[in-house]
Image (spheres, helix red, strand yellow):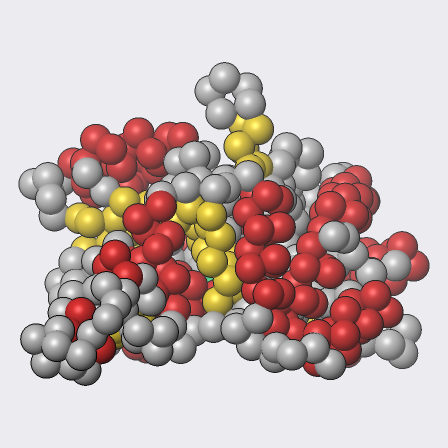
Length: 402
Ligand SMILES: *Cc1c(COP(=O)(O)O)cnc(C)c1O
């Protein structure tokens, strides 16, 4: 096959393009109505009360850490098998990242290990947990909520891999990722390899009104524009002495206050419009991903050189289709020679030089490190054709059966 096959890619339709062009011709390129529209639609999709759109998933994580008040030295637990941003957001606020190992069957943060960590220190040692819906497999947040409540922790769900994914709660109900029922905050990314693409973009969902309002402020420099929340006096705001010349009890139209040190983490209106347009097709994309996953699973089921593949996991959103193989390097290079660009997710975060310099080392997490030696993510995205997928499967089999 001449065409290269990546592990993931966006799907842009004519309708997406038209929507963006329409927005470019409108009065607002940013800070306009498309942002709120996208937020309302996305909150509805997840089943949360609130959503805040931001410039990317990393900014979403940073704002969450700020809104939850992460400070110098605060300890927060996360998984080493994730994109670095899940951990970095704690470092941005001066906090301390405490990694904990994965469950080798699910590849998710192992809750029993997290419990053991929490029980080994006095209560109050840790401030929060950041579980990641790795590859699209939804974390059981009901269990995490119980644990978090026991130890007084908050939860940020990194749901970048799993919009539309869900887990079954103890009553047998589907709990959609980012629905706000268990996590304090959930975050998503709209990078082109993710389910919904807006170029760069991100979202935070929550059911907590206080956190929601805090996030809106922090997204725009920490600026507050609300008469009931001002800290400076009315006289100061109006610029008159002792109310002498004032004929109004209201703060002037121009007035605003920067009350906290925030950022400019806004998304633009044309990105939000693209996100909204993509969101309409999210369920179709999810269905296609599940179909492709099933096809891989079926074809590899009787191959003893392929391990760890996962299928028929209800609620899995299949951002990635991960398998474990021996001679992974050989397979990776062979696929590349055949124009198939598989990828590795992830190099364990605790072994990145930055985190090694903070004291983490090889041998800290057996399961994560063993997983890294064997994992490879195969192409999976809605526009991957059956023919392309068959070619990927055939090449893999021919590599091991040659
Ligand atoms: C993509 C991703 C992020 C970061 O999102 P960006 O939009 O690229 O900043 C964070 N966490 C995980 C698990 C991701 O996959």
